[in-house]
Length: 252
Length: 284
Image (tube, rainbow over all chains, first blue to last red; front, top):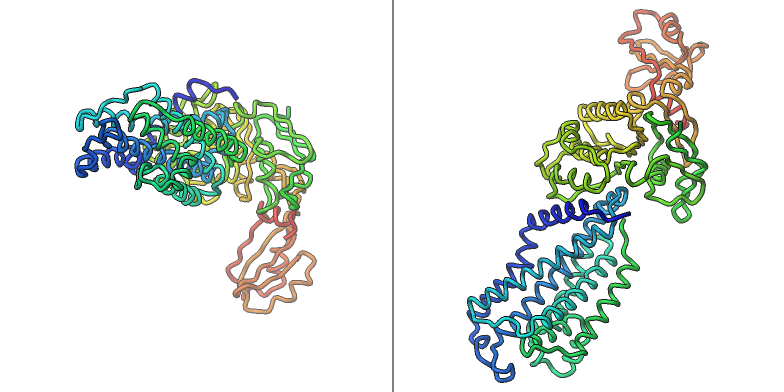
């Protein structure tokens, strides 16, 4: 089954339209992170105070955008992507497509690209709006920032695919997604920043996919560097979850 | 020339044998029916032909590219709720190397291109499903229970659509448990029961083989038990004041001769139908 240009073009266009017709998806993946960034940044004075620990930067330059990017990635990876894939399987859409010349890899790839594009849109909007509204500097090491972002997305989406592979139906996918989503937000430092976590919790967090992602993205926004530990943990989750997902994914 | 040849097909799910031993062949350009009761193995058979299931035994030969040239309409296949009719057709058209013109298909199935899938009625969904099975310009269309759940009007329209498709040279493999559909559409049918083929014939052949049964119904003011002894009569039943007598071609004359004419009213006769033929074959 060859992948042809018309298939990719048409699938991308149709899936994008379907995506835009779900206001909830757009709200949670784009509106909520950017809205929270603007509101929290504008209402909590501590976010605006320069912190010597951050090399003179403010939390609104580092921690807050890092967490909001992560919120968007986890929403796409743990909720939107698995729900769509499992719903497609549940409704026989993937099975129906399997009788046509289109390759399942094309169908899956378009979904992934769409979710990756959403997180990139949110990230870019956040950087530009942050810069215009709160004078947030652009990442000082754009390549390292992009690398951390992509690796964080790959590991998160691999886990999302694993959730889709393991979920019997869309209700299970949603439940499982939420069960993974909130602990991961916690370990990422959404409610208690990593620096304030007790030592034991921080060690555990460093080995969770979102803990490593959150720590790495905040650090790369702070000083332009990343730790090998976090990169290694993200890569390990990406490969591990990816392999298991491919092994167990069913089209019908 | 046979375009589909199935020989000794066998398929089981765990311990349950869904298809025991099915063989048949479909000629190019015909509408071939697979009929049988629920659970007889019809869907499993055509899903094996369509390449959706892997047979456990036997052989299937389809003289066409399974993905490019075989269009499939599955039972209970849904689309995303917010996908519109035209988008669905454009999307599926893009999958094929040599798709049919979408506008012509839309006209043929008579669907509003801008309606979302969730807003389509059952009949409209079936028509979309048929259009999607045809959008690749197939040589063979496999249609599974295509009129189940449709109202009589929608059913008739769907039958006309299938006839037009056949007239364009498409071979149609049709699964159904609806005998009027078989009679109206099919050139030949395979009757499947408990995973095996009972017989293959034309619909007319099946009816005549079931023995040309006649059925007479009437109301009677006198006892009718004596009718059972007449040689022309096969059976006598009384249901809600209505007497139903079945028998051979002369059964009507035998009944009116045997009973006083003033005692009998509301006489109706029916010749045997595809339903009778099917029931006789599958043993009920």
